[in-house]
Amino acid sequence: MIAPKFRTISVSRNTFVTLFLILVLILMFFPLMATFNDILTRIVINLKGYYLIREYVVPFEVRLTAVILALLGVEVAVTREYVVLGNNQPFIAEIIWNCIGWQSILFFAITAFIGLQGNKYTNLSKFKAFLIGALGTFWVNILRIVLVIFVAYNFGQLPATIVHDYGSLLAVIGWLFFFWWFAYGFVLEEKSL
Image (tube, rainbow, N blue to C red; front, side, top):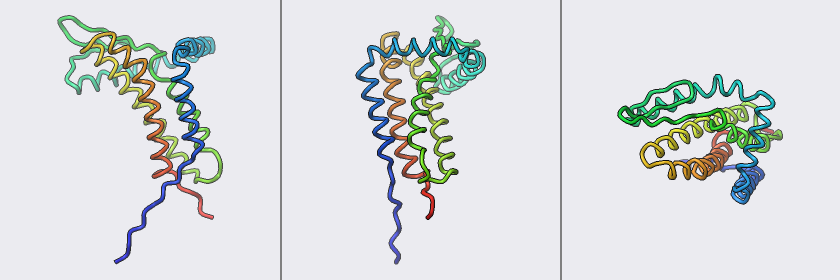
């Protein structure tokens, strides 16, 4: 009987160090994050980058959010940027362009720049890892929006604010740690010499 071969997981220490530093800095400067977020928002507004997000991405994400809430059994309707829950006393949640998770995409892009550099891995496996990471980050953001609206609808504004401010950040950082572990263990293939 031949013993099965197990693949050893090659992990890039730099990527995890970068993720850990991002997490530490975010948690350390969390009170200042609102100001930093406002500065980033002003930059995006001045560059007119929000227009495409507001006109195309937000309505798409609003519809996706409504579909998931409907699957959870919530009675839901949508407008361009609003999710309306319930009938008797409707609960209205606004999803604006700044709340869709572009900051998470920025965190992912920074870690991807560091994690996928060099010539150690094949270009195809780098592309696969990047695609999985981008799609995963997108879905984490959708589920984050769904969770915030669901908590606000069922438990009120304060729990929803806590989930929005703290839970969302930890979910994205947790996703990035999981993703890079998965990418280095199962997606990225080293070039043969």
